[in-house]
Length: 214
Image 1 (tube, rainbow, N blue to C red):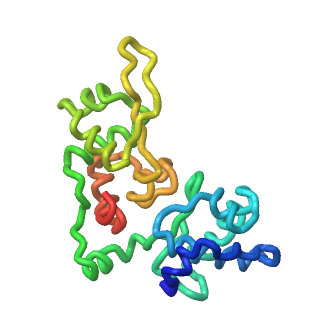
Image 2 (image 1 turned 90 degrees about the horizontal axis):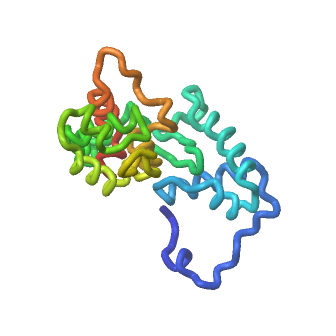
Image 3 (image 1 turned 45 degrees about the vertical axis):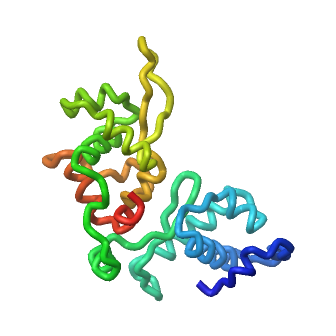
């Protein structure tokens, strides 16, 4: 990236002039911000930079995403623009994962154990759930797996079940969606003949980002 350090750290740098930005300008700026960030950037933050409402930014990103991700685009890309509920991000395309892993020396499967994958699958396909529910489905104690997934920010507490003892409920996070290359849980692979954990493992193997962040 052609950005000088002193430009980023300059305490008295002038604010960007957004008065004459058209939609195309906004799209280019959003692309540059997402590329430089390397992680999801909220529509609120983009709106602050572009002096536009969150709704306007979402509309701009949605329109740009359709053009950006089109397979018949004039300039084919190895990356894609992904939208989440509150943010958006640039990600590599799944089909190029093998080449990226080989070039960067990244191992398959990330750093999740089989037990963690099983625990995560139970939560993702049934959330929100308690740890006791996960234990029942798996038939073994899942306390370590739940704790490990929470430490990796793949799951998070989301309240308590209204029963005696009020156990903690868990759900997957936006980081989980990023790692598995999903925009929402509705994009999870359908469970038919395969187990949920094997489907998640296949999805994890296909996502280069998971090997870098999990």
